[in-house]
Length: 478
Image (cartoon, rainbow, N blue to C red; front, side):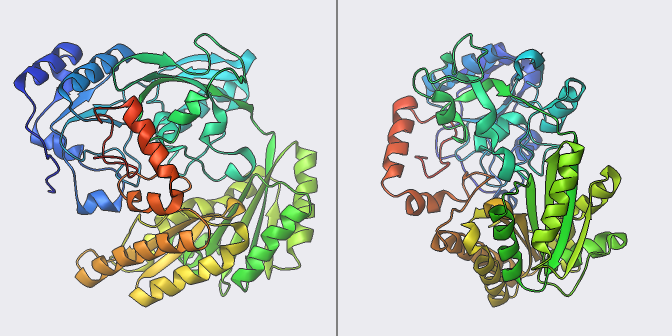
């Protein structure tokens, strides 16, 4: 267990006051609980777990506010946490302190379907929200792969996106306002204290300052989100390509044709192999370097037309095409992409998939060379790796597979992860497009942002002079 606490232990008075705020049953101090809170889904915390000193389970804005006031008084770090599905160490302790568990603040407060918006608490699970919206014919469009587990508050913290970001954008495009507890414990509402408007240009855009700040500037306790109508139907075109370059050319041709797919996903040859191992009945075409899955949505007649047009555009580049606008067949074709994240672990007997270097984004024009270079890096270190992702906006997920009892592989995969992050910057891209910075990508922030990092640090210092909110993340002070 990595020792993270570089400060005196918590005063007994602090524990006593926390108990007054939350009650004895929601203040946790035993070692088993602290170990549980030492991890998120990242490879980093598997290698280096980080224990807080105490965890509190919040149920209201008032409790969050009182806790933060106490922490600010004693200069104790506070780490906001949702479902801990993050992959960057963003929701773990860096120096003891208080873990603020927000997962029980999970109420859908108001579905205002007439005004196309919803008010929720941050602990609502993304898929639970969309299930509640279905009877109204509405949806919250961002759809990360962890939608069955991740909280919307966590999505806002990291500005998450997903499969359909190419058409519908990312989380920030759907946040109309939020209630935030500041590092002083004061509570503000962004986007207008009583507004139900769908847009506003009044004042500084404080909501978008908070979005993607990973809990370093404030703790979100309520969210007002914009909704869209559910699409009537969807269509799928699955195609494979002999060369990576052909897949890249097909994507550019689709955009140039005036089509706007709701998703464009890529799987390389290793991912195809893994999916076929997990679910042979899908029978994905082999002996190709890449597969693309295009999705279009809209009215049924519109979808049929788009599927036909898509097929005509990509058939010039693809060696195999399968398409459908029938719901059951579309779901079957889409299964392959949904399975790939779990399936890549099958590429190496006894191996496990490492979540590291898994979230880079590069310009679309540089995707083919980036894909090939990632495989070159993997070969250089002797690591089996599958690559997949949201090719429509250049977002790639790499899936290295290693044996945990092989020390050489465990060392090499970390070198590989560093090289992938360096490659992203070299390709004029970014080290993260969905999952955030946290601890894992902090060392790249100055290279990516240059002098702009000084402004970010100045904002942090202004809002949080005692540096109590999620310290040590995003290359901000520890």
